[in-house]
Image (cartoon, rainbow over all chains, first blue to last red; front, top):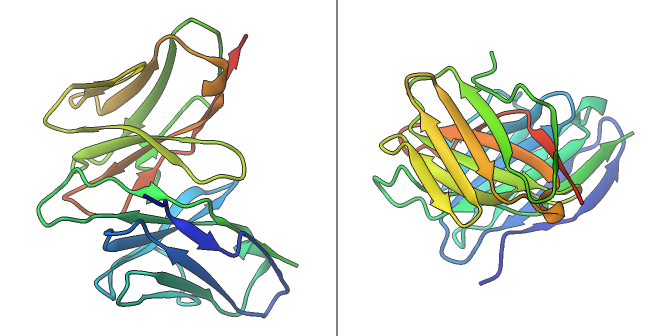
Length: 116
Length: 112
């Protein structure tokens, strides 16, 4: 079974631009979560999508948004990029069966975003 | 407020010996805990997990121990191998939420 895939793997943008990152979950997984990893803050939860609806949200400004399509693929968008948005953006997918607290998330390789 | 803490940024052990990585948490509502391993330029790889109804879970060379009263968990790797050298992250969730709260990681180096 193929793992979580993310595109692109690397991206360079300038301040003020916007960017869209893509994530394809493991086949059959219905939940997609996004995380930001930086050296100072570590891995931080951005948001989670399930059945095309945002189900959980972390403490990030509104410039960070996402969506999920009917095939469970997800995109994440960051508008008006700032230097501090430079990070590794990770996507994770899980089955998310109702009532299962032991649901495990599997991560993709990440997209390395550099903002100049 | 850091709810999951890994107080040792790094750990170095000899090949064949035991590696013990520690993690503390403050939120008593966490009921599921996971360990991930991460190599540079790759995403975290799931290693092992434990739910709050257990105090131990074992998978091959990896064992996770959970002490709920102390809000502490640890990952034991026996025997350690050079290929285990990576950054290890502890993560926690509550109530089946997909939101994982991560520690800042411990860099393990296993010397041949």
